[in-house]
Length: 125
Image (cartoon, rainbow, N blue to C red; front, side):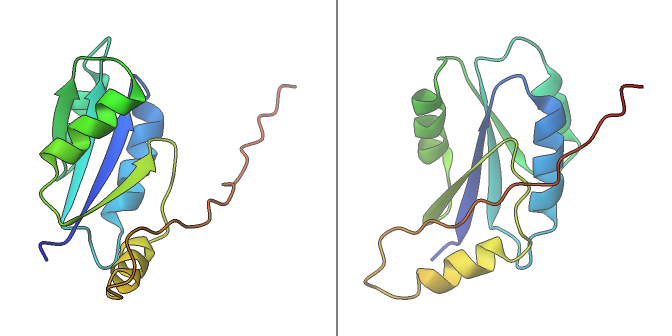
C-alpha cells in the first residue's frame, strides 16, 4: 500500500483552507499526500495558500464538487483516498484511525464523526 491521500476540494475560500491545511500538517502519522483541488477559481489565493505548505496543488477548471472530487481521485497517488472539506480542522489522529480501519480486508469504506468547532464570538459593541 502506498498510503493515504487526503483530497481537499475548494473554491475561493483561502482563509478557511489555510486553517484546514494547518490541521492536516499536524497529522500523526502524516498522510502520504495531501492534494488540494482548486475548483474553477476566480483568483490565485488558493494557489498562494497551498504554496506555503508541502502539499500538492491541482486546478480543475470545470466547476462543481463532483468534478473536483473526480479530479482528486484521478490525481491521487495513495491506495486510499480520504476526502475532507476546506472548512474542517481534522483531528491529528484521523489518518492513523483510517489506516487502522482499512487493515481489515472486509472494510471497503469508512466515515467518521464531524464535530462542531469552536464558535467565534464577535463583540459588535
